Each structure stands twice: as C-alpha cells, then as structure tokens.
Amino acid sequence: MLFPSSTGTVRSPHNFRRQWRDARAGSPFEWVTPHVFRKSVATLIGQEYSSKQAAVQLGHAGTAITEKHYIAKATQSPDLAAVLQKFGTASLSGPEGMSM
Image 1: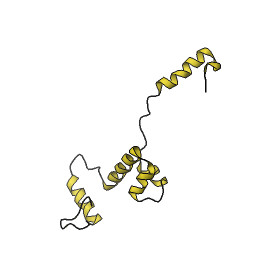
Image 2: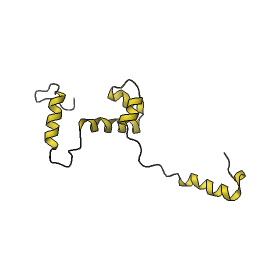
Image 3: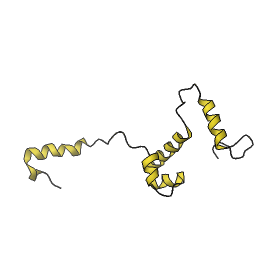
C-alpha cells in the first residue's frame, strides 16, 4: 500500500482524495490528482517496458484503453535528419540514386 491509514489499514479512496485535495490546496500542485498518478505510472511503464505491462499494472484487460487514455503520446519526434537527408541526395541524382 502506498498510502495506508494511520492505523495501517487500507485508506478509503474518498478519504484519500479529500486529504490529497486539502494538502495541495493553494499550492502549485493543485492540478495533480490521483488520475495524474495513474497516467504517469502508465506512461513510464509503457516507455520503459510495454503498453501490455502498463495495462497489467493498471488492471486493464487489454492495451486499448491504456494506450488511448493513459499512456502519454510523444510530443517530440526523434532526430531523423540524417535519414531524411537521403531525400535531398536522391532528388539531385534522380530516383535511381535512392535505394530501398
């Protein structure tokens, strides 16, 4: 358990949400909700392992919901400039200069 009650038992989700809301009130972290935690965990596991592992961690039966709603999409593409330069080289030498 991540957040047990003061007596070491399972904390009620309603109590946790209320206490978490009170703890972050007026702070720069007001936007952080339990759902943000779930999405962060799914994204990290999806990046480091797979969407299947992320789905298992979240208790989903398959990966569709996990991929659609929980794993953040990449906002930055990898640097592929070296590969794309081949288009410029191929256009100067004609289509036969491009090998596939």
